[in-house]
Amino acid sequence: MPLPDYYVEAVYKDPGLERYRGNPLIEALPPIMDLQALKAKLTGKIKFNPKDCFEKGHIRAHQICALLDDFFQPLAMHKQLEEKISIMIRAGYVGRNLADGSLNKLMQESYERIMAGESSSSRFVQSNSTAKSLSLIGCSGSGKSTTINRILATYPPVIYHSKYNFIQLPYLRMECPSDGSLKSLCLNFFREVDRLLPTGYEEKYARKRHGTEVLLSLMGQVATQRAIGVLVIDEIQRLTLKRSISKEAMLEFFVALVNVVGVPVVLVGTPKARPIFELELQSARRSAGFGSLFWEPMQSGPVSKDPRTGKVQKSEWVAFTDKLWQYQWLTQRDEVLSDEVRDCWFDLSQGVLDIVIKLFVLAQMRAISTGLERITVKLLSTIYEQELKPVHAMLDALRRNDPDLLNKYSDLQLPSIDKRLLELKALIDNQQHTKEAETPFAGNDKALRLYTMLQAMGCDSDLLQPLIVKVFKDHPNLSLPELSRVVLDWYASSMTPAKSPQATTEKIKQKDWHTLTSDDLRFKFSQADKGLLYHDLRYGKELFDIPSWLKRVG
Image 1 (cartoon, rainbow, N blue to C red):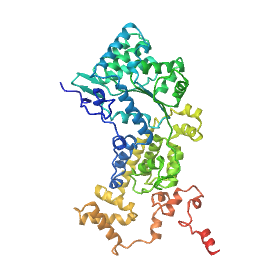
Image 2 (image 1 turned 135 degrees about the vertical axis):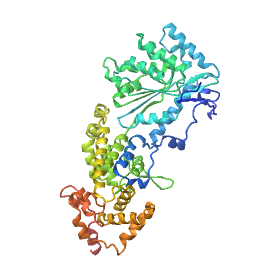
Image 3 (image 1 turned 90 degrees about the horizontal axis):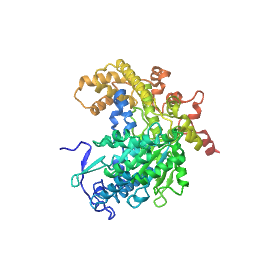
Image 4 (image 1 turned 180 degrees about the vertical axis):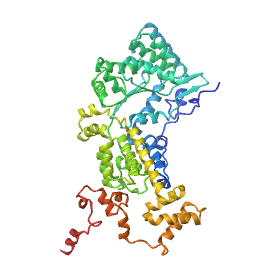
């Protein structure tokens, strides 16, 4: 009988440590990852081709939106989390070994405990001493769930050991129920196991009115039978919604979860759940664990130098935004991210990963729909004010560094983001139809791509149209690079004399100045606040540097 698609058959490899050798549950896991392997496994698979910048707007919109799901750049905190989860899974299996019978012993002990109606774990301390707990706290959008999912995806969800006729679950991820009930949380555990395996635990145990203590013991039995490597519980802040449950009761539950179930547990939540773990840190009864990770948003940070080499070291914010900046499908894109745009980007997003990426995606979509075709400070500010209103309170709390406000607003989401992206896509489609209707080669995709590309290079659009029509008539079989060279030669030749700057100026209406090149004074005027253009101009660039000249002449 063939295995289901998401099962893998165990292949045993040397785990590299004596402590782990001889344990099939550990030897069947993927190798422990070094830094290079981690980057390769976790980094998003977005591909960027420069020629795609000159595709039609509605095509580029799909590429831009893919950033929301597929862009992921590993940071130091992601590496730290992966290492902890890797250790927790393997260390948790040390006391559970298929080869030496210790797993069967645990199953027998769990069974006896349930039959005796016992919930205390004191009798079996030795058998679950390798279980650890870890809490991960961070505001919405900090990448907790995304990172956890990417790390867990480096392990197969189900491993079948044909030699032992045994099924292993390296991890089990579940969410706290929306009603904040501890009993519902236990039932969610059985539901997730049923989703992966042909079992009926939820139906079996939901019909009986078991208390949480009995359900915990049953969870321990199932976790042992299925050799669960780590249990990840997300959205634990939902437990604070049920006011009938005290912080002490929740702490007792989590301590029992590790001690009774005997499986490493990772608890993930927003700062609303922080009081539970602050109580745990003060408690002398806290379970043996890896402690808590508090994920703060990225900090802009000053540029530093390596004391050994003297080379400039980028902060994580600079490295992250430089990487993300490469994924622009805009015809007038700036290749280098300016300090002005980077600083504005940080101020608006406060380094919250989800907001950083959504701001970037929405800015590109708006840039295409308006014809701006580049990202500017004014555009980012407009997007923030118009599209990100639901998270203003949370971001203001981060700017003020106010823990109480952050606890209050840390769960804010952007529920309308998908709807807004669809609206922008529709706007881009309408703009594309209008643009195609205005060009004499609307039915020729290759000609339109060439037209857009040469426009982005600064060629006058009125001169380009007849040249592109002519080149496709004379040389229909040439490639796009060859066609561009021919058109540029014609454009520069005396056969097609360039119009005077004054004539060109008259043809660009003020409402379209935002589509001009970034170094054009008319474009700068379109981006400046009313009456403040002079403040945006720089000495030695757009302005004659009179102060420096006066210093030189005395």
